Image (cartoon, helix red, strand yellow):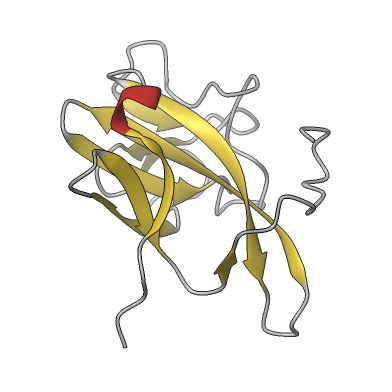
Length: 135
């Protein structure tokens, strides 16, 4: 079964060579709807999306709010442990989780230039508390 696309923003909303965080609503296996922190990377027409979670200790990756990349802008960097991840694959290339991967999310750009995700359980719910004080 192919999942329907879920538009989250326009391509132009993500600056080139940057990552932007989002907290979406997702229905869990037990039926409850909860926050799902992710981030989207863009360089040119290439976009990637990952869960905002380091595989080492399940902590958020951003070392400052919305800051995911190392100083050179060539790797994703965990703010807690310093682990470095490949921008394209999400594979850890240095640090305590070497060889593990970030959880990738299927992403595409549609005909309207929107960035869309394909992931199970996504729901449109503006009333979900992200737990991060973003509401």
